[in-house]
Image (cartoon, rainbow, N blue to C red; front, side):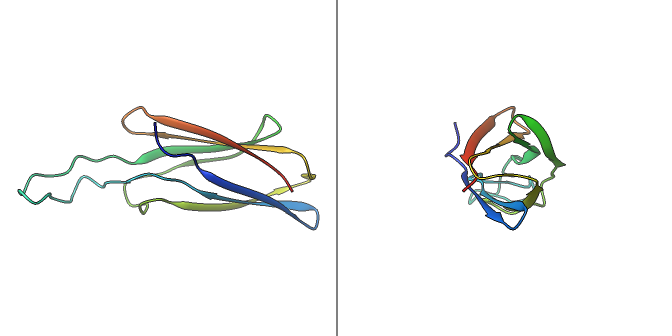
Length: 103
């Protein structure tokens, strides 16, 4: 399984600013290795987030997203102590879910 995501959720006025750093190689399928063989595509396809179990964010990504992608979004109406859960799934069927508490 992939390394844990680094998630920070901090209050800023009446919203929580959520920052996520994901650990993933994100291969496009267009690069070649040292022997000239194409490196197979391997990238995050779906990203979603929940605030206290309620969906608040969803995205579909493709191979053009950079290695170890960074994501930032806001959640209006969040409070300190709320839970933010982020999940990603890649084109090989692997997935990762991590959680943070709003501070």
